[in-house]
Length: 162
Image (cartoon, rainbow, N blue to C red; front, side, top):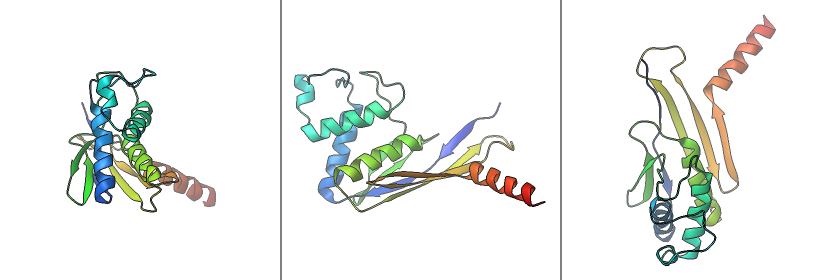
């Protein structure tokens, strides 16, 4: 049996205060005591600044299968000092990672950008097991590119020209 993976590692560069805010958003999103389905904040949830809580709620609601008390971020992150490093040990969900970056850039009305380049890999040498995609993230949104789509487009052009 083959195992399929999506590998990526990238950084979001932020000023110190922005980075602290972004890390608080991730902490709030992962907090098992926070329930984003309720209309009113609990005493525990009120400990988070309103902007942090609001952005964490937007982010968590964008994730598939959100369950209060059981939030699994589909990427790992680390404070590198100058930035936040985002990756995963096995398979990263780049859509979730891009959404997080977009929300942070938009919140700060930042003119910066984040580039995500992902490799699709496989534990066996299967023809369908390799490829990749990329995302260009700004405060205005996320633009995607997929190597499989690019390949199919070029195949179609080649067949049409032949």
